[in-house]
Image 1: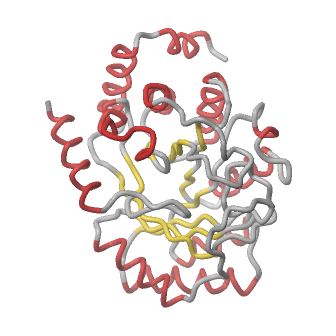
Image 2: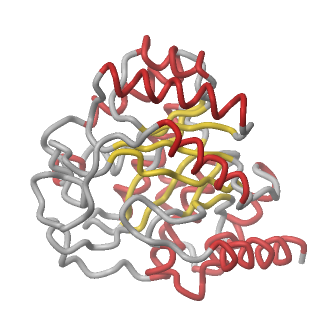
Image 3: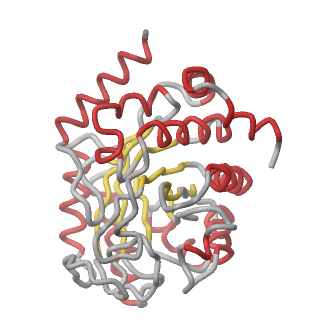
Length: 304
């Protein structure tokens, strides 16, 4: 790991925030990217990710259901556009889809593109280049597949698939000409060096958008009793990601409400330029009105 990057850990908080904000302003501009996600298939996942409420190995009491109908996907895509989201993301639980499920999603994407006209993303687990190409032909422009954490720490979080499995999927996404959205979760017990390693891997892979989730411990999961990450450490992490990833979209995602609370705008002064709007997969977010107030507050701060 480069010494210059490790020195970021030693910078005083105000200096780090200032450097990240100037990096965002110079390389990423002043647009806030808003993404709305749909939990199109919930629970029943065979993977053992220790943070996830949707694993069938954990007893979390979430609602589980099979793939939703095409009409429901269109309805939620229309709502996403109505609340001002730039992009609509169809998300399914599990590491793979059946042929029928995949075909239905491709059909929904084609119809959403032609009837609603919102940018489309999907998070459907591990897919082949052929499947990714089919999604692109249907109208998808971006594919989401988190690395979750560093290569070193990954085996502490997941054992049913490997870090390289995830890397290969992202490489396939880029190979077929789709944008790649990939980030991770902080606050799972990893070190700041692990977070830097994750950011460097994402830079090497050339991802386009990086969601930073902050662990919200869910009762019934192996990480259900972990203490929340501090607000200051979360913001420092966002700043370091911005300095490393420069022009990429960096989104504050799940956990921003629980951890950052009244200091969410600070994450945008520390380099973030995107967020999820309208809730998450199994966790309810803030109201749309509150999030738009935050967007307007950030834009004013960026003008000062």
